[in-house]
Length: 483
Image (cartoon, rainbow, N blue to C red; front, top):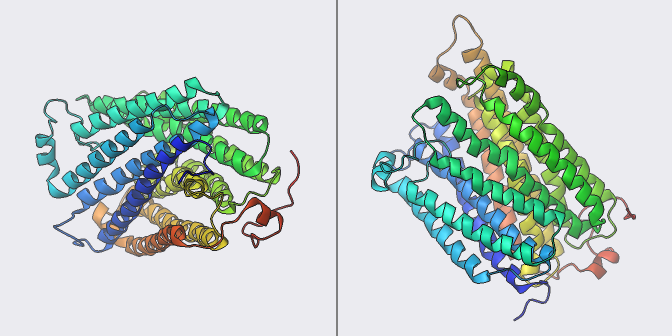
């Protein structure tokens, strides 16, 4: 049956990517919970899944499922923004299966084969690219990622070129091309350790604190355009200002990773100043989201998507902005670098900025992919509960890790005499680690609640029912007013 809600039928390919993203997200959280238990029960799952393997799987699943989410979001957004069908839906489906199979085989390789043996079997002696955090993928997987990225970018770019050009689609396109280009530094693995770390940060930092922020801004702007009815011109102006600050602070802010790796000392000033400014675009994003909701011209039936969008802006500011600022200045970073303070920032930043924005797009798009404007009241209520449960679980984890990091600095890093060793310090942090496990359990329950919302039936909420007050106050807000 033809989906009459979708404006362009080729948008339906995004459903495959969204389903895969949610499946991999669930697996990532399960492995993360296992890692948390290994902190307090040292031989948990040993020797079947040792800590180093579980950690690789946990972090790699994070990257892969977010990429699936970004790709699905692009396949959904770009046809509508460009007012034309996707250039090649068939290519999008082929690349989906290539990426999914390659990712699955890589995870199996991590779990089934010792890492050194995996490197030997996959040609690491031909081009040495393995052995670096987040970039542990074997050479064939990295090459597969490049092939999938090029095919994806070709498909999206051709769609944009043949249709209408909007600020949202162009910003998204720049972000996606930047993502692919900076990944190429993962193939550069010089023997000089200083250069190695510098190129490594060209991938990791310039992804998550550079071009990914462009993708975040474009996705958030798209959802706000659709759910608030605010003039596109207003949202475009906000978007341009936000990405300008994001690029300026993100690129020069890379210097906060260059403090103590052997690069010139002036990076302590550049890194401290510009990375201290990195919270600015995230704060602007928060103001932007609330401002658009207050200016809205309509009450959209999908109020769950609006909650996810507003939550993205707030949690992104707290995680990437505030928790990043806490330890970004070089005199502070001297003590906190590599402690649990870093882990606290990483968890909240990824959750607030990127996990939530992908869920925002899925929440907005999935009902239309299933032939309705919005899910039922009960389904949306479950979604909203899941947001709060996951956010509370993440807050517990982050506060526990922050406390652990502060105590770690106090016991291990700051004393000039009588400092505890690493393992002795870890013993003193066990209470914080148990609290972190508790937060992880709550987060998993929130995720399961979210997944359950897809199976809750009921009469879909429509524009007419919203006008008649039939949403039951899903999202309390001020009366709509014109921009």
